[in-house]
Image 1 (cartoon, rainbow, N blue to C red):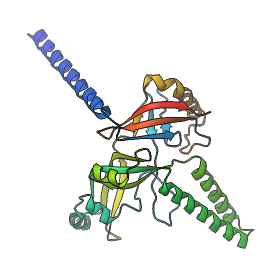
Image 2 (cartoon, rainbow, N blue to C red; image 1 turned 90 degrees about the horizontal axis):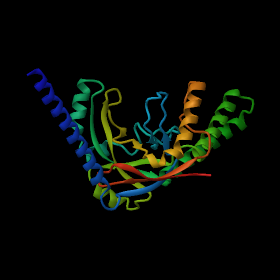
Image 3 (cartoon, helix red, strand yellow; image 1 turned 90 degrees about the vertical axis):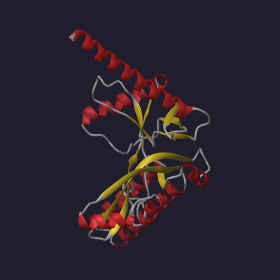
Image 4 (cartoon, helix red, strand yellow; image 1 turned 30 degrees about the vertical axis):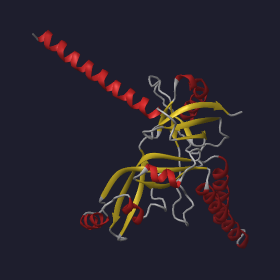
Length: 286
């Protein structure tokens, strides 16, 4: 009887596994069915090769790197955080209960509420050009300050940092920027019709109330899918890059978040009906 029970349990577990795989495969098929929702060419500046020091981990993926414009006086940009376009008014259009957030926030400091929305990602567009402009203005300000007081060591350091920041922005940092969000992908696509420049994907937005400032903030928390599996046919292009990164990690025990070399590959990325990405092609850049 025990042996029979074990067999039944094994059969049930096996059937659940098969059913789960079938559901996943159906989702992948349905996502790729028909014309892509968007298709865009990105480089290593926007696609970070995954790395692992675990020899048993044979998976390879590309992590999507992006940035957001913060306040106009902010010169540091990150992909996630509080972008300047994610205002309380925008949160209200996304369906966040503003009054409840204020009420609960006053009762409990740090009250948060999150939801999944559609995020618009712009490649090499107005947001990136604005980031370059702000970096140039910042450099000019530091240059003028140093010219007024040329012997000031602190101003010399600030000027050098501003030079490096502009250089990184021009040559190495991602040109993919999160610029908008909404609940209706159709409306967003009408607003941003170029499918080779604007990606519409799903992401997580967090709304919270700052008790001290008496203000609601929106926080772009993450993309729902930020890693893209690399098919076997493209691994041979990326594996040498991954091996060099692993070697540097073991040697220096650090990993630079901003690469200091020209992009070594470009990839065509498509998003389907479920707004999930896959790799169409990968090519080396000479």
